[in-house]
Structure formats: C-alpha cells, structure tokens
Amino acid sequence: MTLILLKDVLLWSTIINYGFLLLWFALFILAHDGMYRLQGRWFRLSVETFDTIHYAGMAAYKLGILLLNLAPWVALHLVS
Image 1 (cartoon, rainbow, N blue to C red):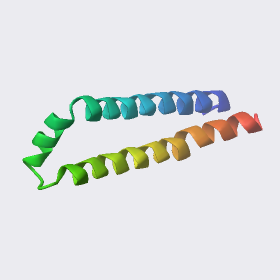
Image 2 (tube, rainbow, N blue to C red; image 1 turned 30 degrees about the vertical axis):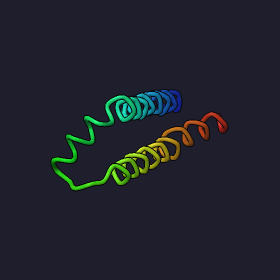
Image 3 (cartoon, rainbow, N blue to C red; image 1 turned 90 degrees about the vertical axis):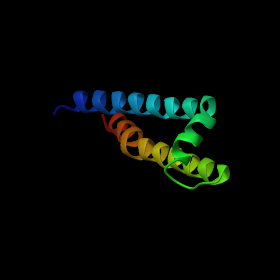
Image 4 (cartoon, one colour; image 1 turned 60 degrees about the horizontal axis):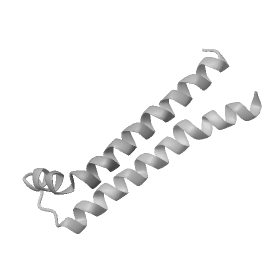
C-alpha cells in the first residue's frame, strides 16, 4: 500500500465515520422518544440512563475516529 493510498483511505474513513456519528446524533435528537420506546422494550432504563449511554457511546466513537483515523492521517501528512 502506497503512502498516498493510505492517506486517502484514512481520509475517507474519517469522513464516513463522522457521517455515521452525525446520523446517530440526528436520529438521537429527532427520534429520541421512538428510540427510547424501542429500546425500552428490551432494557429497563430511565430516560436519564438512556441519554447517558448514548452520549457516552457517541463520545467513545468520536474518540475512536480521532485516534484511529484522523491522528494517523495528520501524522502521515506531517512526515510526507
């Protein structure tokens, strides 16, 4: 794999993952009650716990994007 191809893969991976994160956030904001009702059938969660779990999940996903996609992409650009 060439350096240029690796940079392109990391860039597109970052863009796609941020797209999924934005979709998750939009669904969480726009369809909050429906998501809570659907997942409330499977798990006994309060609304506060449901919100906390989703917020923590989004934070962990964002951290993963930054550490596994964006930071290597920036590092490759700095060394090339």
